[in-house]
Image 1: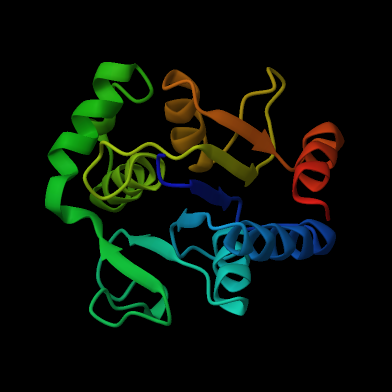
Image 2: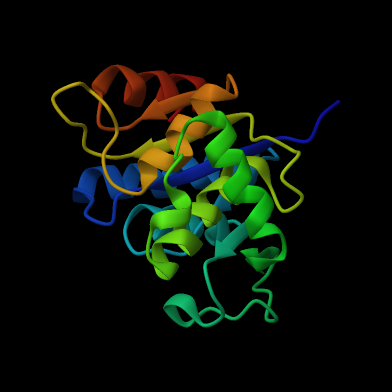
Length: 183
């Protein structure tokens, strides 16, 4: 049986009710044996991490650089590891280019490069070869119903890999997740 892993990510600006739902989802997923992958950013990432920590769940939090949001890769908290993503950033960038998700990654600012590569780790794991089972996120969408912000990179990569994605922006996705998790 494969490892149970989900990616919990999204926008920094999250409505209070969605933020509370993200915490509940993370708690329920941890209690069902799922490992969380996230990215230590404010908002959605923080809510998923909080829920995971609340019930002593297992998680991998990917940092774009040491000290991001006060997190240090060498100090695990409970069962959550903080992982610096610089080990294989070149490989992560290549994945983004070859998948067509971000063929311009070599032309972005250094911080953006680190964030985009971190998003690859959030979906594919530390060795970039263990995809998450599902990506649960909250992010606004543009007029084409495409995810906006940095979350777009992880969501589009997941979709290219055939990974189920659920945007908590949509009531149908919220209701689906709540039903499956019995929330």
